[in-house]
Image (cartoon, rainbow, N blue to C red; front, side, top):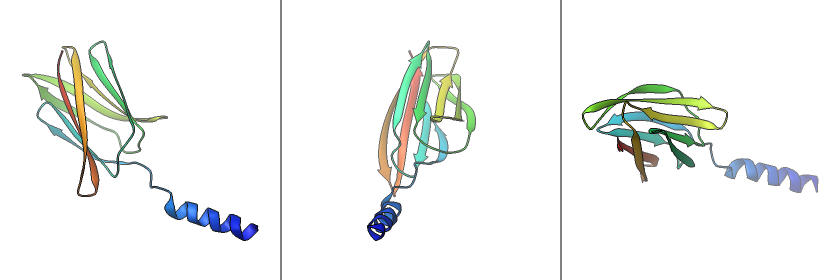
Length: 116
């Protein structure tokens, strides 16, 4: 019985998927490209014109600005207890759309932001 438990624990360790990790963030026209080692679980919400997205992922904090329809918007990625939080803030109300795709073994999430 002990051997079965040890063997099961060993197999579980080998086949356990690695944690989702944000590898890099690349600003693009009207949004961002986020690169993960595999697909991340995503929760999104628009609050009073600001866009917030929570990823079940690990990674490092980052921030910057992106041009959206002739105006500038700030974005920031920060670590929280529940994962990584990405949010966009601008002087105008914003809405976001996104799509994900596996490319060369990495998961790319394309986030497009526009004025509401």
